[in-house]
Length: 107
Length: 116
Image (tube, rainbow over all chains, first blue to last red; front, side, top):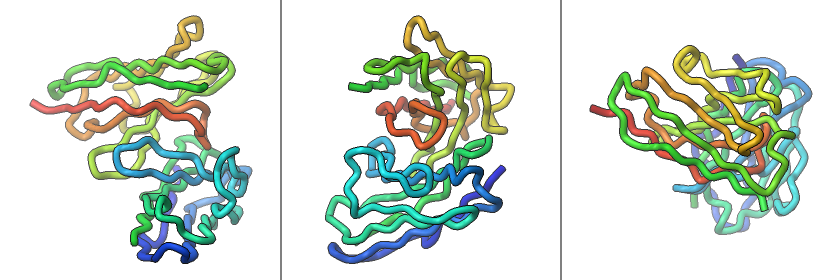
């Protein structure tokens, strides 16, 4: 099983600032099948990034993903008020699929 | 418009059973892997199981193997999760999602509470 470790656990920032979230895998993620999700309280997760760096249609370009192998990063270039939420990474290159424990981005 | 609607959640005693359903619409259901993900109260996301388009491949989280069964009915555009021998630690919101990873579409979730 691939263990994903996200850091930091909590990120305290202000609107307009840049956020950098890390996701480290215990072994290489096959084909860089790494996704990032945003979740607000009481809501289902929202896909932000898939394949480590691809954005689905409708996701703002202030969200970007990078990395390969075991080290991945989600960057939010300029935080908007609606971006304060919890973010999860997920690997889907091998079974069982696994999630990181989450990073909370707070004001 | 893609829609996924879970049903079947509720309160069940430890050792009991429950069957979750996920009704899919707005896409060709038989063309996609489907996945169940759960989230315990105040906790993070946990992948539970997924199933191939034709139902011939299924994968499970170790802690639910032998107790949970994922299945699908492509004629009814429906995904299921049969949960037996339920434990307190299975208490969570259960989401169905389209795809096997990098899931762009999710249901609203069904709450399962295991308690006496």
